[in-house]
Image (cartoon, rainbow, N blue to C red; front, side):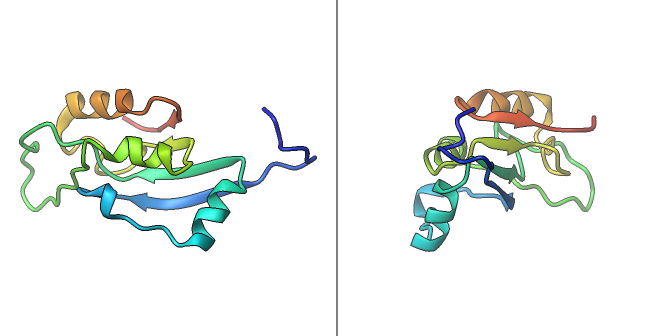
Length: 113
């Protein structure tokens, strides 16, 4: 990995991302600069791309994402995506697999079953 001429690697960790309309998101110049000054930009993708009906579990909140959300994350510089969260299988294994496949250039991480 190229470290942009430095002896150090800048790592940015961001929390949960959820959006049904990612194109409406506006990042501040300060945050955008922080992303692009980093080498590794981690983001927790909190919920799968919605393929249809959620798996019904009484009292559970479902967090679907837009089909455009993975592309938005990558276009805005995020390159390490965590899928290890409690909403990733709200829409079942098919949605999890589809979400993983929707990221084209990022490293996908996860843990658990």
